[in-house]
Each structure stands twice: as structure tokens, then as C-alpha cells.
Image (cartoon, rainbow, N blue to C red; front, side, top):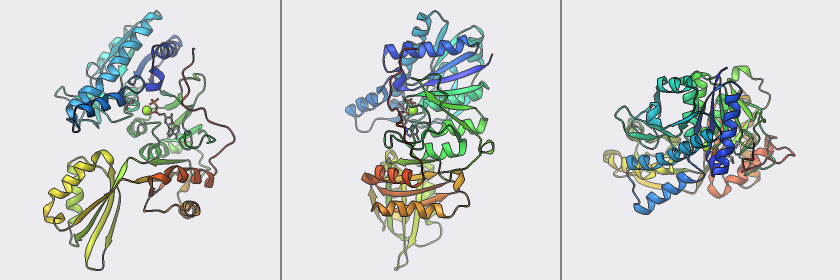
Length: 418
Ligand code: ADP
Ligand code: ASP
Ligand code: MG
């Protein structure tokens, strides 16, 4: 007998019938003799609807109130799932983030979990309950409700699994596992049976939204055995995510991802003196604005240009932050480009294979796709392209690196009766 943490995403709990099907899947795990904690997301597109609602009230909703609003979505689904499990004759109790004691930093809309209290969870499990926990939310030490960022229920599940030293964390979703790219873009894409934490972390961070990046980071840190599997084919084992040291790497590229939620900021006519970049990026960091690709170039007239990318959500704050650094930016020009996407290839097997970057650039060039910025790290290469070229880039790269297959992935499937 072990402890299993399961997580079901929004599409898996989108209506009462699906909630009953999830209840059956959870009960099956319990009847296998395991203690079960199940983490759920808000039903269907609830979170999107709540965001839209807030925007209809004001264009600039307060981030504390946004967290207050968005956390209600998960509270609906935990209560309904607990009721469904009870209706099937099993003991179940729902708990929100505060009741569990999922303690986070006080950064609204993108808080990180700092601690999970396990006492109440252990007690409820010992009493024979299946525990249904609200994903995506936590509470600060001062009692403020926070959320973890879009897709954050995956991180709630992995963090609970780590805290409880669970035997496994299974992320059930609407596809059969992790594919080499989003199967909605390339339906004849290979499914991955095993992928390393390192590769999955890069793919998730670079836009493969099948897993929330911090869920992978947490799984890696605490060595949580993690699976992504289908909520409509429960016996299918999906994709296992493990440490790279346990893997045989034979392919240079494991996956391709794209992120079109970034914007490029260009600062030109900056003073070419020590400390310019340090001050600007220091100010952005202080305001919790993550910066991604950065290019600095020196102009002929002895001034500097710096181009970098930030998340679209952070654009207004970033511009305000830069403008506040008057000493540096008062004579600079600031321009922005929202029409961009970052396309990346990821693979632990590309280490020490210098030809991979050239192959990537050539395959984009063959399709007439212009590269605006490039960044690399040990196991990834990213290119910034025009937004409307993102899908063509992904298709070209999947072909280039042999990631297609003859079978079609089943996408956006429904949860059948189990
Ligand atoms: P959930 O609601 O279960 O959390 P998400 O929509 O967050 O589901 O994540 C599942 C979706 O992620 C899939 O429907 C798929 O279209 C998309 N996706 C993007 N990249 C990948 C990938 N590399 N492998 C599998 N799915 C991917
Ligand atoms: N409900 C949240 C979202 O839609 C969290 C999640 O689903 O993981 O982003
Ligand atoms: Mg998700």
C-alpha cells in the first residue's frame, strides 16, 4: 500500500458526467489498496471565463482580487468531485489550499510554493478518506490567497506528492502523454515513452503547456516519479519523466515547443557605460519581471542597443520600470514588438553535436522563415520568429529532426465511462 497523488485537468472535470468518471478512476486507485490524494483544476474553461469577467469590470484588475476570484474555480470542482466520490460509497473530503496549508510566497498570480503542511492530509488519509485538493492555489503566511500561474495545478499535485513522499504522481490530461510537440499542431507526431526531467523542464518552460514548468522542477528536486497519462485511456501508462542519468539518449532532439506569449522590447541609444545593463535588469528583477532572450549590440556612434523578451503580461510593468530608470533611459528610444514567437528545439542528445544548430537554421531558412534572435543553452536552441510563422516553424523542425510518425495522436478526447 502506498500513497498516490493524481491530478485531473480542466477538460477531465468539465461536466458532471466527467466528474463521475474521474470519481471512478480515483476509487479504482483506492481499491488497489493505496491512499489517494487527488488534485483538480477548475471545470472546463472556468478560469478563462473568470479572467474575462474581471476584464469586463476593469481593464486593470488588482492582482490580489484576481487571486481571490480565480481560486474560486478550483473550489467548485473539489466540492463536486468529493460529492461524486461519496455518491459512489467512498469516504472523501475536499480541501482548499488554505485548509491543507499550501504555503506560498506573497506574489499574486505567480506565487511559488514554499511549504506544504502534511499533518491534516495525513490525518484525513488515516481516517480512510480520499482527499480532493484544490489545485493552483495557496496561502501566504499572512493568510492571503494566492495562485500559482496558469496551469499551476500540476505544480500543486507534484508538490503534495513530494511533501507526502508519495510513491507516484500521475497527471491525467486530455492527450495520451508527452509528444515531441503539441499534437494539435502536428497530429502525426511521435509520443514519448520516457523523457528526462531536464528535457521536460525545458520543453514546459519553452511553451509545451502539457505540464506546468514548476511541476517538473519540483519533481526533479524531490525525485518524484511523474507520469503524464490519458484520462480517457486509464490503462495506458503515458509518459514517464525521470532523471537523465537513468536514460539511454539516442536522439539529438527530443521535442519542439513554441511560446507566443512573449514580447520583444528594444532599447536603443543607451549610454555605453558600465552598469547600464546591471541597473536596467536589476530594476526589472526587483519588480519580479522575468527576462528571457537578451541581445546587446554596440552602434557606430558609441551608444548601445539592448533587445530582450518578457512575458506579454509583464509588458506594461516592464515599460514603466524602464522609464523609471530615467538616468539611463531618458534619452533612449523604447519600442516593442508583440508579433513574435519563440520556437525551440530541446534534447539532452544535442550536447557536443555542433551541427544541430546549423540544421535548425537551415530548415527554417528553407521555408523562408526569418530568425530575429537566437539563444542557446546546453540542451536547447531557441529562435525568435514572426508569430504567424510559429506553426510552420514547428512543422519544419519536426520533419527535420525525424519526430513524425505514421500514427495520428488523439487530441482533445473525452473522458469515457470507466
Ligand atoms: P489540463 O487541462 O489537463 O491541464 P492542458 O490543456 O493544460 O490540460 O495540457 C494538455 C494539452 O497540452 C494537450 O491537449 C496538448 O494540446 C497540449 N500540448 C502542448 N505541447 C504538448 C506536448 N509536447 N505533448 C503533449 N501535449 C502537448
Ligand atoms: N485552473 C487553472 C488554469 O486554468 C489552473 C490549472 O488548470 O492548472 O490555469
Ligand atoms: Mg494544464
